[in-house]
Image 1 (tube, rainbow, N blue to C red):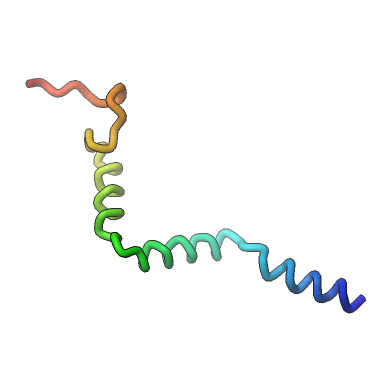
Image 2: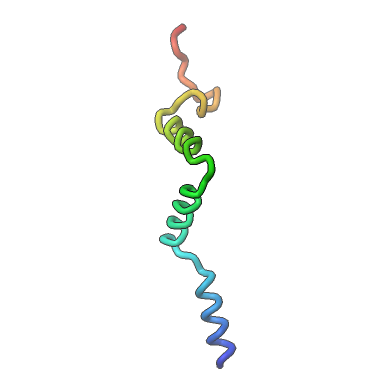
Length: 63
């Protein structure tokens, strides 16, 4: 019985939930040495910039 209780405690300690995952992602982003670069890419994705859009999906701009 004791081994079963120990197994349960260990297994439950390694079962991440969504909250833990989101906190871990935020923590890793905050520790990133290149956070500005990541934020720049996210901004360009949000704005659908050509630099992050595959060529077939790019809108044809008048020249």
